[in-house]
Length: 244
Image 1 (cartoon, helix red, strand yellow):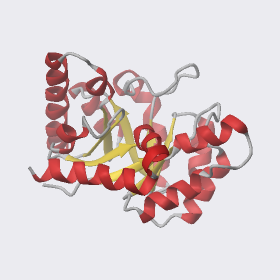
Image 2 (cartoon, helix red, strand yellow):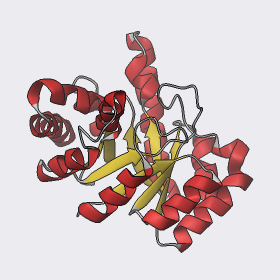
Image 3 (cartoon, helix red, strand yellow):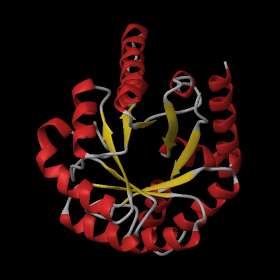
Image 4 (cartoon, helix red, strand yellow):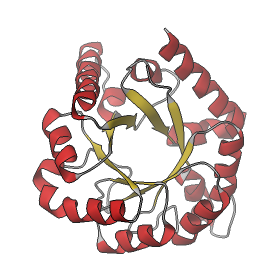
């Protein structure tokens, strides 16, 4: 079974900073604290409207971290240009709508395959690992492979949001099937969105998943316990689920 990595999304440190203006709290400092607390990577989503992470944050993160930086972005020419300048370890292509509060679902790779192929190719040519954020659907997985992505990140939002136990089990089974299929396709499997201490265990226990990306919940917990303790506890819950 693969070692389970933990990527920390620091977007919402920047949300707090931008709510008042100025430079504090500094998302780069949060990333460095996360690194010292044992994070395996840092994720930051540079949105079209710059509602949290800003361009200068991405350059600072790349220059000041020694762990991998995962640059989440929409497939646009503007973002491609910035990614090629920043040269992060990885880029995760995500769907983006200006009015959404958070990413609401996976990228429809099936419908957008022809448009995505040149973005994936340009990033790969620059030595950047490419991931596609998708729903746990076999057709989307096949399309992601066709697009040339090395990695998929399975969207766990619906699994986390459903209130019925029957629906939750059905969503979990769908994620398990998709994760197993990534192994057949020869692409790496990550997962994320909406994960917290209570719901992360079943996802962490899926052997094909090698990385979880968690942000909003941990930044919220950090208000009460501090970021190192929030990360330590998440790691503990993940590792226990993986072991058993």
